[in-house]
Image (cartoon, rainbow, N blue to C red; front, side, top):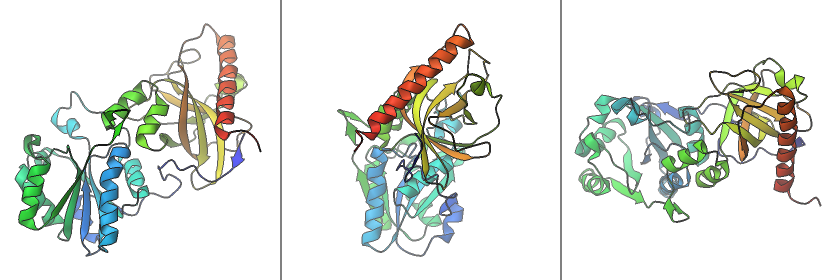
Length: 336
């Protein structure tokens, strides 16, 4: 069921090279062109539909004024610094997030290292701090519930008040709801951890993806009659262990294949300490060891379970492949 097709619009941008418009730190952003700067600010973990409202406001305003747009984000998550015993587990790695932000049309991404020193800046001092590093700053774009500064005491009202003093416009985007509830990174993390990948994709506004280079495995899948591609990948926010219908392609290539993936500890054949992502390509595999792959997660089929033996596992894998194949047929629609 491999097919020559355009790369699906997952929003990851992984078919492109590492962004050249990703600046690591405010100090590196001096290279930005000397034009009015429209700056979206936030964690933007997941770059979901709610974040898009903030990003698109900056992009459109920059285009209208012949300025440039940029997103200022932070790494690690503030919780890693301020409460390391209870860290928030991120949906995306910094480079993946940068690619997604650039795919939204932003001109540049600035990832500032979050430190205790940054956290200690008083709320009223934030805009002067940004202006000192970004002298062409013209406007700041945030979500309406964004909090900032020492003790997270700053809010949009304070940002507007301090912006007036510096001649800066402040634009706040309202929260975006789905089924009556706000879209948030926290909500998406909960769906991923529950295996509710279809809902996570709906809130993201694009399909959740993982990327990695295929490495040689122990060929246990081949012995079962279902060879797999082994992709080292272990995000902070782990999706539920189990079996998923996926699509996959090689970075910078156009051949898109249908597959079924297992993410977990493989308790039946060789329980591992760290989870593994293994993908079986349906209908013949054009990829091999060393291929740089993008895996698009589409539907949750079943949780990972321990079987009584290899034969029972083999029967279940055959059933999983059939279920995934049927899912992909439905997604393609009726034949012409």
